[in-house]
Image 1: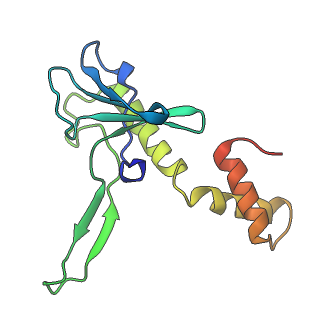
Image 2 (image 1 turned 60 degrees about the vertical axis):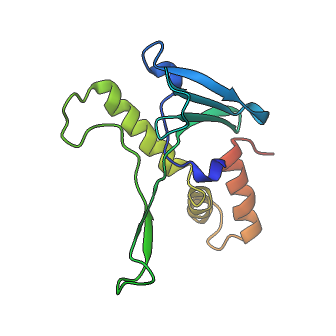
Length: 150
């Protein structure tokens, strides 16, 4: 289920006290938080997952936009929505919401599955060898993702 949740959320403690309450805890440290006074698992719900020794928080929102369909003249395409917390009109935007936005975008980019192999290949080419083996890139990417190496 974690693969479906892609829009980062701030830690529940970042909200005013009483804004969110715990709805359920699951195996492996998964926890679900809903807005206070609601027992609904809606788009405002936050799901917390342990990932590589830290806890990641995600909104319960779909982040893929699909345009076109098989019965139209448009070719079907899909793309991911970037996460955002600030209003596009900047009404009520605060420094806190700007920091949340930057953190979410950086996490969104840094945690993408292609970042580690891409960066490792470039670093190996720059500092070690111009033609690294796929095994070398994979081992480097695993160390990049986990934060640990041998």
